[in-house]
Structure formats: C-alpha cells, structure tokens
Length: 296
Image (cartoon, rainbow, N blue to C red; front, side):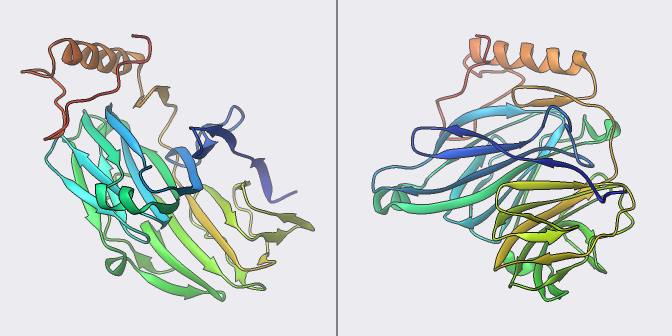
C-alpha cells in the first residue's frame, strides 16, 4: 500500500499583484486533523507605498494562526490587541463564539516596501470549544521550541512533536511544525497522530520513488511510515492531529452546525447595520472600515 493518500496543489488567486494559494479546504480532502484552511501568501514584493489592507472581519468556531517566513503584518482585534508579527513568531487567535480583526501593513513598512511570504491556517475548534471566549496570544519566535531532527531544523508552532511541547494553547490534539532542512536530510513522519500531512514551501522531498516540489501538500495514509529525504535546501510545514468531526464553512465562519453559521451571518449583518454600536460584534479600536457579509 502507498504511504500517500492524496497530493493537493494550491489554487492560485491573484489579489492585484499579491498571490494567495488555497490548499485547504480541497474538494477531495477538506481537512487534515483539525486543520480546515491553509493558504500560502506570496512570495510577493510590495513596492514603496503598497501593502496589505484586510479590513475588519469576523470569525467564529476556529483558531487562526499566521506564520511568516519574510515580512511583517500588524494584527488588530476587537479585544484590544494590537500586535506586529514577524518571521518565526506565532499570532494565535481563538475566535470561539466570535471575534473581529484586521490585518494591515504598518505605515513605516508601507513607506519603504517589503518582501512578504507566509502561511495562514485555520484550526477548527472541537464542538465543546466552539462557544469559548475569544482570545489572542502572541508568541515570539524565541519562546517556541526549536530543535534538530534528522538533520532538519524544526520550530514547533503548536501542539506536541518529537518530545517537545509548544506553549501555544490549543483545544484539540494536533501538531504544527515549521521545518528548514538542507539537501539530504532524513525527515521522520510523526506517529501517534491519526491524520498527517506536509506542505512543501521551497525545495522538495523524495519519497516512494517520487519527488514533490514547492506547492505540494502530501497527505499521508493512516499509519504510514515512509522514508522522506529532502532533495535540496527545503522549507516545509508538517501538520496534523485528531479529526474534530465534519465542519461547515461560510466565508470566515466555521461551525459544526448550520444554525451557528446562520446566527453569525445574522449577527454580522445586524452589527453592520447598527454601525457596531451596542451590537454582538464590534470593531477593533481605531478601525472604521469593515468587510460586509458577502451576500450583502
């Protein structure tokens, strides 16, 4: 039996000179463990005066994590957190019953321009945590476990792996690793997790007589233990965990039931109509713009 269950390639969208590759969800594989969304942002070079402006928008039922290889982004949310994320850091935002945030390029960075490249992921919360209080936690790169494994340098973003535990608070059994490896490194595939995958960002890996280059997510069969070797200097993400059950997705909302999705839609629409005054959702301090519900 093959160790590879499915190989997924990102669907590329051009957002006006800035490309985003959507890997998950995929028609034939919507989730890997609790990971329900994975985008590769860039790589992209922003000229002076240009940058990212993702206006305030809501989330429910998930945790978002941004992980950068290059560049920086400023996060603001309606809990009052205002945090710049830089390469190797982790911004972990738990939406729970509902949160609103924006993602923008700082004025100083915008003035000079920047090169940016990173991964954004959503982790579906288990049903018992869908109504959790929203929260935000920043973890600087030097607070996350960094270790060598099989000739590769690994940073543990979240969960537990190879005897290390990340300080990031999670709500289900998972692992998420950023990996940098030279050519010829032997990568071990974690056991003990029901669902596992790796996503090649740069370089490539060789397994089962096949080479997989950048932009390939390899989802492994349960229990597989293939020999994986890097074929050149490689950057990749390893991720997975225990399934949390079927989830519905509408826009930025993830939920175990359609009723929760419908309530979030109603609440965001009503909040916008009330200009976010005494409403369920509020805007981050200092923000006045917002993204309307798509159907509106």
